[in-house]
Image (cartoon, rainbow, N blue to C red; front, side):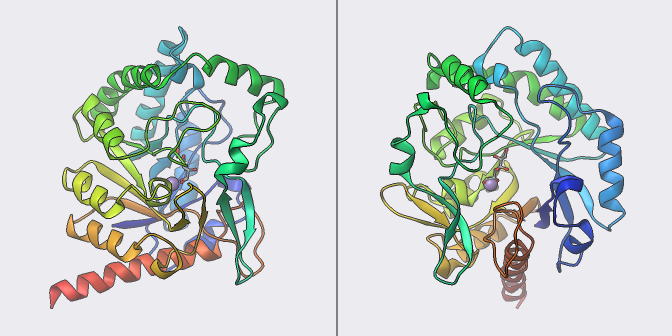
Length: 348
Ligand code: DNO
Ligand code: MN
């Protein structure tokens, strides 16, 4: 397991020099943020990022994410040109020795929360999702919830949501299949492993279709192109927000088949209503047994990349919610500690 850390580039308040000081850190997970979605990521920008990361003694082998243009998800006529661009981006990344590309296929919104700073009893703040609060929203009046891509103007967002009104799950699946059949062969050819991030949270919001929510969805996704180049980012916190998803079992099943390339490791406290909040990584603090999850990775001899996914805001840190330095660093060290314990116990 290679431990990595997400970094948002030069605008990230957490400097690479600090990330390097976290014990056991192998590399950085990042992206090119100043290229419009759908355009090709230029080689020189990728190379510059790689050099910056490597100057701090870290590797750049995982990209999160190369975003998929909405026209591809909607299956519009423009998709072929956009898919060709996506393929060229993969080739450029491969030329810079990137190995894994994380992406997702969630319409309009990436991860969604109703609060970015819910206060926990210990005074830390965390990301939370309240299912009733989401349902109660009247989308037609425009939406302003934390954590969403603010790059849409309200009228643009409305128009985009309107386009999705007629798209159901089976059509979204068809559009994903079209994308994968075009992209996976290119990825395979240039030595990149695609790693789909599941929907977060794993449920439909505002009637938008969401199709990567559980074991059967993952199985279906992998069967579209049955090749290791078509793989997964297994996000414990995203899938784990639905208590019916058994994360250690998913790791064992899909990991043993060599289809998990990137492990997102974080803990959540869930309830049967679908509400959840993110906790420290420690098993006792949330609903997920993180020790068991790491054990599952150990048992399948996982050699891929992992990162502590979100963290709480602790010790007075401010900045990008979910992506502070302190709690994610604690998470990385805790996870590496679990791994070392397993290694030692199995050597004896
Ligand atoms: C949530 C996070 C996501 C993730 C993207 C991947 O669990 O890991 O923001 O980065 O959805 O495309
Ligand atoms: Mn994740």
